Amino acid sequence: MKHTKTALALALIVVTTTPGCTSPAPDPAPTASASPSRTSTAPDPRATAPAPTTADPAPEPAPEPAAVEDPSVVADRVAGLLWAADTRTDASPADTARRAAPWLTPTALEQVTSAPAIDADWLELAAHSGRRLAAVDDVDELVGRTPDTTTVAVRTRGVRLTPVSEDGWTGEQAYVVATFRLTRTQVSAPWLVDDVEAMWALDPTGDEYRE
Image (cartoon, rainbow, N blue to C red; front, side):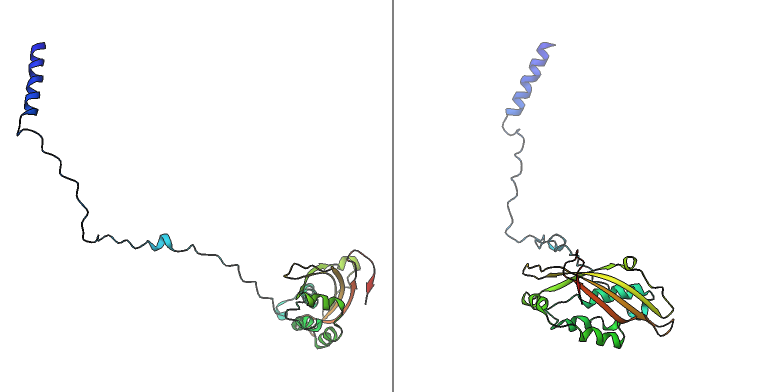
């Protein structure tokens, strides 16, 4: 058996080395064609398109007075508007107060636009092109609320005012305590502020007020 295996191995060697019996050489690798490729090289728009951006939602529009049935909501709204000044658009405190006009009777509108004067605080705010941020507190429980009737309601609000500007300046805070008398001509009519009584605190934590 050993001689048979040796003879077979020698026969294989002879066959593979005999001229004309060698295995054919592999085909050469294809060369690049000079003609343009039909495959598109344009970028996939899905890969290059910028990711969609999410814009900040637009602020909800303020409700119309006719749509508000709660006098407390009206008092909150007026308190937030009367003293939230922006000297970039307001020439005087009266301009600030006029933004509350839809929520005021003609009597109250005349009251709040004729009383404010341009004082040192306003001049300092205007010098920085600043504005006053208003934070409203419900202080009815602290002062005691007068019971409502069908056509008259009284609400008291505290308003903390913070003067700020885009140049980084921050002024001294002030605190306003305002009592609003609201009226309506009938049950189906909107509540409007008919009278405003306000006091300013020089120090938000102090007890001294100025008319």
